Length: 275
Image 1 (cartoon, rainbow, N blue to C red):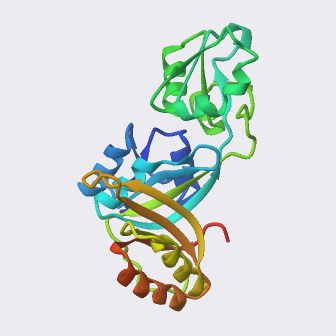
Image 2: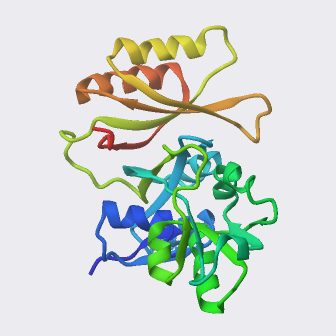
Image 3: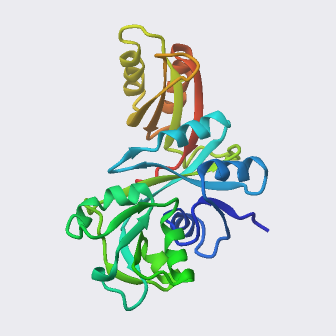
């Protein structure tokens, strides 16, 4: 019997939607309110796989999640891009004029800020999870309070959609990764993307030289993110994503980077979900 998959949030959240897309619509989940708790379920053996958001097309990288994967020596084994559509939800027989407060995750509130300029009477209140707000409104019969959440949350908790797709930028996408304690892959044939981490000395051209290696080895750099080293002021670790057509080219690049950079690490090798 397969173990459940841990997510940040509850059923009806966007992490839950990724589980339904990537695994199975009926897959069981462990609901966690924080990413730290999601990681704990994996380390404790309660789950074998977890889902974590890593970046959003509007808000950028979720830097702490890179650090969690790195610190705990975990492995990225897959990815999923999800079109994020935020809907304005409330109890049946409520209109927008009845709503005094809207509760949601800070990221959702930020992404829908322009919509609420037209409704200055509505107070914006931060919450831990989009779907959890929808659930509370339903279970506690909270009138005058609305949620920003997914269509799935509306259906799951029996709420009315007062307005659809209220995010300011309509094309709003989040990249999620599937994480395990370690990769159990044995075949490289389907692998065409990797997540890497390395550190460089403060020398002129050191980063440029390494990026040239990626280019010379026919790798395409799709993401680069720096993260400060807490124990070494003004020194940074770099997290990069690369795609490639031939695993041999990528293998060659790894060999060279391991000589050029400090603390080189492969965070994951997997299939590019963009193809």
